[in-house]
Image 1 (tube, rainbow, N blue to C red):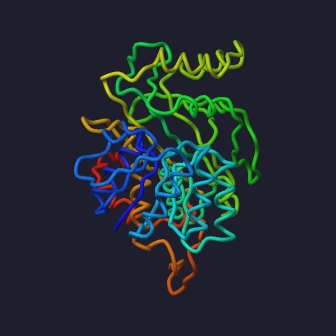
Image 2: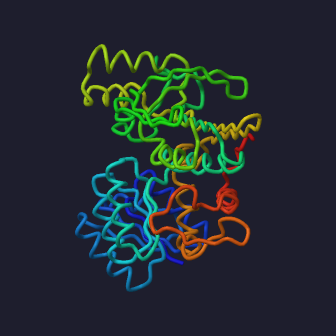
Image 3: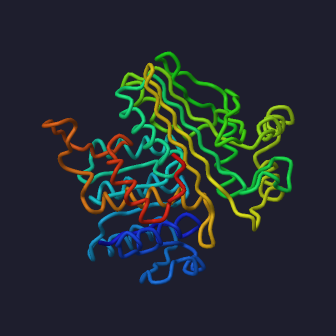
Length: 368
């Protein structure tokens, strides 16, 4: 089995390693030759590309050798062109997503033209947490409410900055999540709310955190939950206490530009040697029936918690795609079968198989 990973940065490196662990030969492509140093030991091939056009030239060559799945960890402004190209060239494709309009364009094109499956928005949030949310809905036999929480945090709460935060992923994406409006499902209707609203305190294994709406993490789960009959559904970010009020003050009262905010996060909240952690919580309720899952992922000597929580789930789903397990017929209920869609959704992921593969990659920090 062969996988092509586009973009060998922080996330692409972890994806390349994970695909190797799942039995794939990995071909990495990046415009930066220095990215070669990021490729895990034992993965045999790396291709230097000068831009999107060069990516296509090299993908044509790799297709001749046989490509089972293409995984993009490229910036969002490159993914639409790459995703639609893979659709047109009958290659299985998945990406980390994060931009609603870009993912919508790829999925719309896939719905019309794809002969092989396509799966966008497969990171942490959107991605893994949304797959768990679909499992929660199924386990409660049609939940009335589904709540998703995710937080990427410093390992220790006593970070050396008042935001109690360390930049472990794209600061551009972080700022957009805070600034942009968010979709929630409330009393059966989809509503638009402002980012950083919906404040609540959340207990996680005896420790208190704050949670509030941020954009992007819900992806198309809100629409899917409404179609499934769920009445209330939302996505919130988890932070150490006090973070939200400072950021909201800087954005709304001080009206700081994105450039200034980026400097604050990158210079004032750099990643430390203390490591990071990712917390996830999904809750579903249907009358008296409740379902809850909490997960904690910790950094280690090889990867940050954010790398593991983002890159490992997409790798597991990509490995299923590459093996052809997310195409053709699937069993909906006992003795009832239907076709997998070409533009895959979170409900299409076989949850038990996903957990088995995550276990192979060592994501063992499941709390319940």
